[in-house]
Image (cartoon, rainbow, N blue to C red; front, side):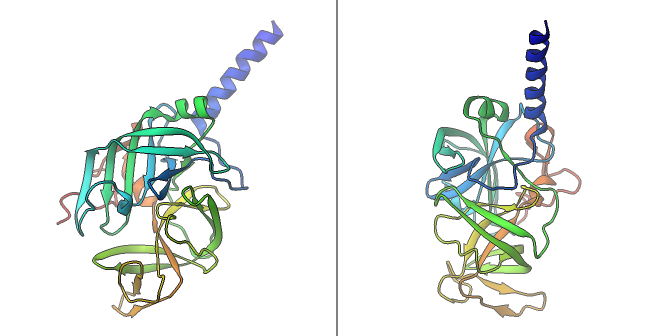
Length: 272
């Protein structure tokens, strides 16, 4: 009888762990990251997510497989048929996931593509032993110790948030309230879409999206910064990421995107 009670208790505890999404350990690995056709990304959940919700994949808007959204354009609930490799802690594929929908894609004010699978988080953990990263509901702060987890490059970059930049300009795209890294995060091609993880909490605070390669001024692969007074500056070799807490303001129960939700900060399709 005691053995049976122990088995029941074990099953209950497993169920609770699935529902609670325990915090990731402080030691970072690549579990839950993805390889998206040469870009990086991650399996993520929002603060309101439940274990039986259909899972989200997060990457950059400029990693979208279709025609890139033009400035001030927002794509919502588009069909998608991408195959994405979900990775283990060493960066090795454990399963190829088939994306059902592109829930939200834009290069307006941010650089985000949020996909949804037909598979739930519970199924992914049960079948492949991979848990999602949690998107933080809080705006990050300068000085935070971070890790940039690149599934495509199979590499972890370690540095700090140097500053939150008012605007970053790259060709016709403008991103707002941008995370600037300290120089040790020398991200490059293939790291686009990598989750930026707070090393202390284990939560996602942003996604890597660009860096200034050659010292150019506001050109492709050579973004520049603009302050509140309109002054432009260039930082050669410095990389940037777009914040992700905006997503948490717009996703409610059932992993449902609601751009009309009170407090939602994401640009809407009628932004133009």
